[in-house]
Image (cartoon, rainbow, N blue to C red; front, side, top):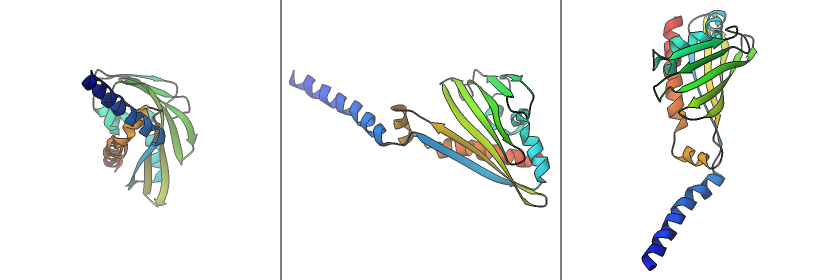
Length: 178
């Protein structure tokens, strides 16, 4: 009986530690990457503004070439939605909507993941004209994990998990446009 009590106490402590730690861990995270493209600002912005073009450079779009895609609205305009369905668990099911445009400077997106997990996050792309013929593109992501799931942030390196995919996508974008 004493051994059972000790095992039960150890199990309770092991469960309690991450729950208590999650109280003190951040719930929000942000990741961004940037690239300089040797093309005029108007050309880069005009290409990226069209959400369908992400199919050509986004790492997630290229992971499953046979995924089902549907589009709603006018591409490049607030309210345009690109939805996807894939059997690949790295891609899953979800949609991306253009929710804000600061003409020539920034595009904001709502990301709604449905499978393999549910989440709603934000992403954006920013554009800065550096010199004649050069444009800096910043791709960013802002997410949130509510308590107690935020305890996973202590073990997940979101900077590398998402950042590496952004880096690959931006390099692909650079190759396409240059």
